[in-house]
Length: 335
Image (cartoon, rainbow, N blue to C red; front, side):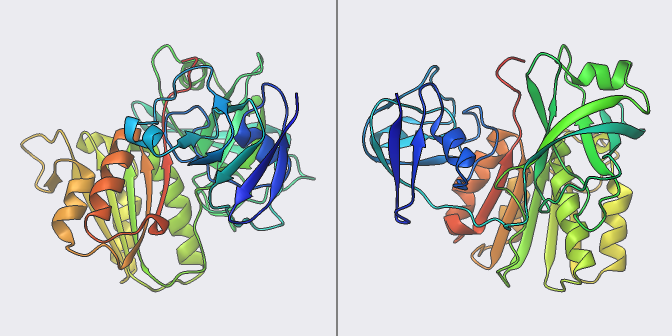
């Protein structure tokens, strides 16, 4: 059965089909809601249910008791039982951004670390994928499932799409990347996806915080800033477990040396005795360095625990919710 959904405050409307999530229906009809993982783990698509009834096939991980008490729901997992009125901010996207499904070939592969592979994929000569810095693509698998990876290059440098893929033991796709994938292998992709991207309409200082391979979309954003000759201060914090996990440390240090407005602060949570830099959790390093975070637009990518801790603690130091942009990396449900 088809149900109507009305959005506050925009008053936009769309319709949800049976067994279709609110988010999928909105995106299908050109309504751009904020989202990230699309599996209920990150909370990026959270909004308020004003009236109406929904249900979930599984209890979503990112919904807390406090959220439920405030009638918050996760639109990526919410299935509709009646007409709805929801309260959520919509995302402004460039009208030129079109989601496409395209064949592509693996052009080049590099081991960046023991468990991180850099791959460059090439689109057909007649096609171009327009995207915003920070967005991601889905790699479509033969059985219909998909795996999501952030685009690590900036939009102006789009001869290839660059991905940073971390090995997941017993994963559905990544062991293939490390064990059998070769140059010229054919893939199918869909994208670009994601409401995490650099927003041009602000002049605040930039605080960029990555966890692990969350560095990939941050790299794309920084390369875009460099291309656009953005000169306002940029603070790049990269949190990893060990020094070996800083798989593009030289590039980040090069930015900091060559550009006066960029500072790079690596943070290790499991450093050995030879490490003389910052240690601990990366969001705690940010808190130690700044008493007032209201001056920043914050862009952060990494595991859900890092995102959640940062969002709460950064707000306690003056950051407003509309200054916090994030992409939460998590395993797919079927992994």
